[in-house]
Image (cartoon, rainbow, N blue to C red):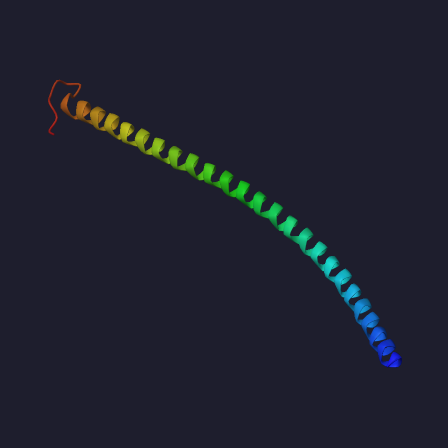
Amino acid sequence: MARWNDEMLDRLADQTQANTEGIAELKNVVTRLEAKVDANAEAIRELREGQAMMMQIVMKQQSSIEELRHDTRTMQADVRLLLDVLTRNYPNGHQGVN
């Protein structure tokens, strides 16, 4: 009976040693994964900052486009007015046909 207990204790010691080694390896893996998670989180923050900057650029471009459209409409109205004045009032006093 004493021999069986010694064998069991030896097996238990071997299993405990294997478990201890396994736990140490798992801790190493967790540490590496945590480092990767931190790196990924930083990359995500940088991407979000870049996305926000791109959105600001797009909004600024849209604002500039609207401003150009407004300026173009104003210039078209001015050109129409000039053409209207020029076609109605010839230098020799004759009226133009509209």
